Length: 279
Image (cartoon, rainbow, N blue to C red; front, top):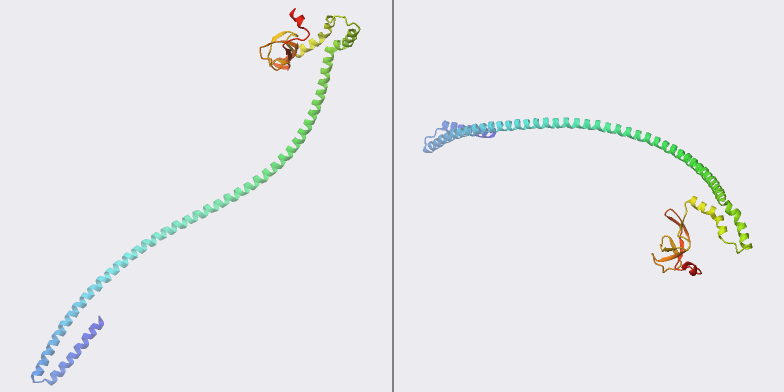
């Protein structure tokens, strides 16, 4: 803008200087008139150009003012946005600082709790180790005591077993004493007198029958009696004997309640006694 004003100012000085020279010379010819007319026209053009430049200057000033206002407005808006963002960032920073402080406190609390738990764990571990050692010692002592008790009980059991066996032998001997005392004499008499009837010797076996009753033993099948074959109670002398078939009891068996101690031996016939059985 200043360069344009200087240009027109220099042009105005040149035109003025030329007009001054012409006025001093004042030619009387037509050439001078034409020059004067041209100078006049140039002066008018100069004024017109000056007015036009003034208008442009005014417009440029207004435009500059408008642009300056817009820039100021944009600058204010940017400053406001910057302040708002700065405020938001400050708020976020404060929040982050608070969160960081809270997290640091939480971390310190967790570290304290961890240290406390580690201390308690070590204490409990040491205590459990001591309890384990103590229990092992107690178990070893109990084990030794149990072994000693087992050995003592085993010895007592063996002693009681021997004592019970001896008592059982003595009780059995008392019950069979008569049979055992008379049995050798009966054998001697049987050899000396073969014609002596067996009926007279039957009373000698009464103690044996009483002993079987005391023990709860029952005979299976009458001797030489005829019964129906039962595989649970009888032992056949032939494998082809069928259950329910009629057989003879050759040797009696014994049982105690439902338990069969020895089955009775049975056969379809009684060898050597056919005639007596038919009678």
